[in-house]
Length: 86
Image: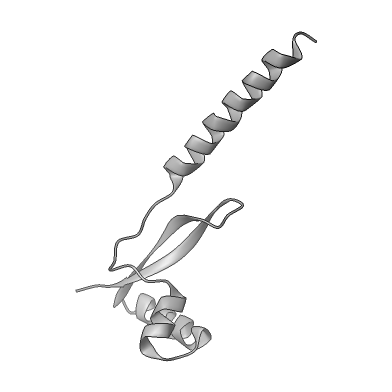
């Protein structure tokens, strides 16, 4: 099977490569982009109520939605963010 020391070095290289790839996929939303939870907190309503209102506003063209890849600790996860269309 070869030198196990070389295999460990290769494994480290693969781990570093995959970590760098994962980090490069992550996106940082700008300050104008808000999650449903942030909108709920800012407006003083529940998250479910904010979600309902955001769906209606999205349908009516008042807001736009974009999913940003956010690191949740175990893997990147697409999280919807919203911003008001001016």
